[in-house]
Length: 306
Image 1 (tube, rainbow, N blue to C red):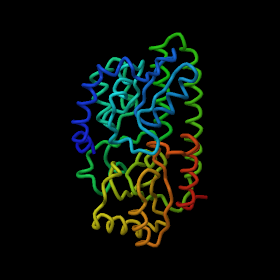
Image 2 (cartoon, rainbow, N blue to C red):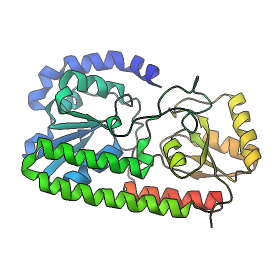
Image 3 (cartoon, rainbow, N blue to C red):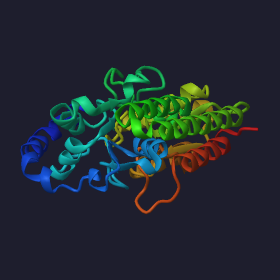
Image 4 (tube, rainbow, N blue to C red):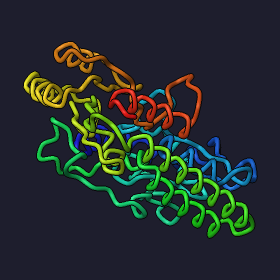
């Protein structure tokens, strides 16, 4: 995943960084409001930052709604936003151009959430097209307890950098952690008694969720959703789906459902959306909690849960 992204990032990233000096003064910086400025790499980190920061922060999400965040290319204005931010919340390795912008412009004001919840690889965290399955899985936010750890650390980081509002950050951070723990309890109870425990997905995004709730992920493609599986890979996953009696093949909101539909036809299953929450769909409604609860209801139906 990262090698392809880094190749695409090199030329555009260099141009954006060279342009920084000419755009910083006129950039649309959240600092203009007088509130503490936070720049985030993609939606779940925006969600946490807004919940914890509340009225004391302005949050910019660099990934646009409806767009895949993996291979995001930063504009010169976005590089300037990174440089001007009071805090950058990102996941190192997930968005290579943001990694570069942070290293060049905001290394002393950046928080890599992987420092709180280390990434893993291996079973449940690799797809059929991942060579060797060695790439670490970035999708930590799909385990609510991991996102709770991130929320607590964002609260502490904001209090450290903006001590005038530390009490508010602590209060809102504790409230968000409590909400995420409640969501975790709902998933634990909702998936405790199911006829099946295997989820067949179009994208290997759900490994942390599977680990947390004792499920097995069988993925058509690997950690990056933009790679088409080969016919041999589709056949191998079809055999697994038949073996476990899968009734549902899951696809996601930001990529085409065609491959999932092809597999579903082969095994006599239906398709359904399981949202990896890398970003909200353009024009979509709801937030992390509502999407995750929709995911839970979808899983309960597909897995035949009591």
